[in-house]
Image (cartoon, rainbow, N blue to C red; front, side, top):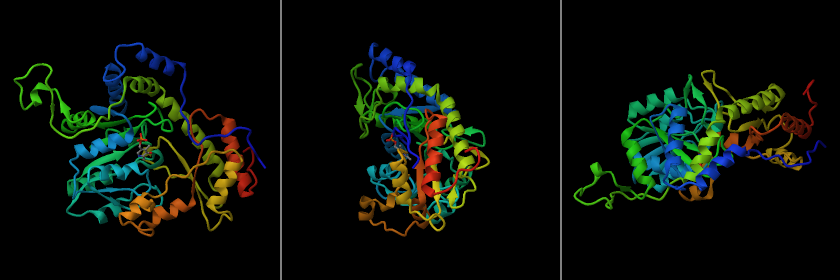
Length: 391
Ligand SMILES: *Cc1c(COP(=O)(O)O)cnc(C)c1O
């Protein structure tokens, strides 16, 4: 049996001395929250993705919640999203009292299928939350056409897709609002953290208010502006969803390395592709010609009619060989909470079939070529296949 001495996780942050120093500098400064580092990080993200505004939040889920607030989603409003995602993509609609509506995925791209989206639209549909699954950009032009036809707001869940491009434009500048997550398994990290980017000044203002209790101090927005400098008004029900300067400084430092990180991810993906493409029973991930994935996850599909082992067996055998595999995702509508709300198995057959057949292989920039070889060797070993020449 091929075996590594140490456990290789499926994803991991890469922090260096300069990142640590950036955090220490903030700790020694006057502001550790609501200070200049947050503003700087917002400017850095906005300029990286070519968006007008960026608003930082305590995490990506809070950012999605705020985007639903800014989009005026309330009880009675329906929001269409993918079942093949993390639970946060639809939970944010529930937080606002809205109704999530799932539309099945495309069997090739694994992203939400625009044809299925159209079928789900009703008079109550208010927004779409498409997900750039694994970093592969959604077909935004088609989604935008649908949104224009029915006057829908697009909130792109780009937790996987910072640095991805669609027709040479950066994800983050293509939808009404775009969410990025800075959890340690994502491309760059703030520990916990999230951002919404937008070009819309109305959304921008609402996002700012929502992040801080629904409070405003802006004299132009006060209902009573005869008061003194101490005065503020809570005009809406918001939350404390603020990011600290400690997190933001880490984010700005990490962001400088994003392009290099993505470059390394692409190299690793190339090695996986060379090893696995064309192997009977294996399906390597799709890459659209007009876009570039940021390769957050490498999802390998095992055709259960051809491969003699079950997904569970392959998963356990890889774990035994110290390869930290994972599964992204259990379709959201199959979660017990969503089942209680009325969703059932069988409703989204493409996502459900995909779920049965996928394993996420380790992919993060700090992986060495040796690590990559270990993964490839382990997969071939488990499947009982001979390595091809030179691999
Ligand atoms: C990570 C992730 C989120 C949530 O981000 P957090 O920062 O962990 O709250 C939302 N959607 C998707 C698809 C994610 O992968």
